[in-house]
Image 1: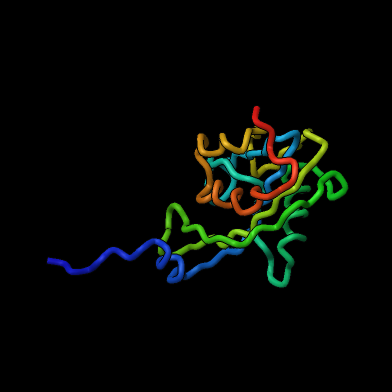
Image 2: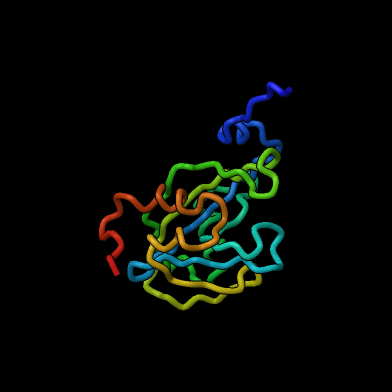
Amino acid sequence: MSTKQAMPQSESYNRAKIRNNIVTAFIEYNGKVLLLRRSQRVKTMKGKWAGVSGYIEAYERPLARALKEIEEETGLTNKSVQVLREGSTLEAADNMKPDIITWVVHPFYVRTTNNTVNLDWEHDQYKWVNPKEIENYDTVPKLKEALDRVYPGIPNNFNEK
């Protein structure tokens, strides 16, 4: 008979051997948020819906990485987005290897007046959705929680549509 107790998930984050710092940027246009579906060509989270995301390189500021990823993944330049908020980080266990990999997410919220998106190879589809609809999608871990870190308290809240 085993007496081993299940470790709470939050404790497994602290034991993870690999901690990947990433940015996730939520782009808002006319009250809707851009979701991108990860292509089959990426290493992780294939077919999952996400915000704009990318690894933070050593000595790189998270905001600088977020703006680079926005341009690379959507074609929206720094001139066409307005950064509204940087949220506190959150940790998400990897779907496939929760005891080995933890994603440390640095969330951002930006607004654009341009809804033209030019996807790169990392994504195969995009949608502008009401933020409340995010829960209806098969997303990367803790996407809704990342949005919650940057969405509350922003003036001119999302329109009810």
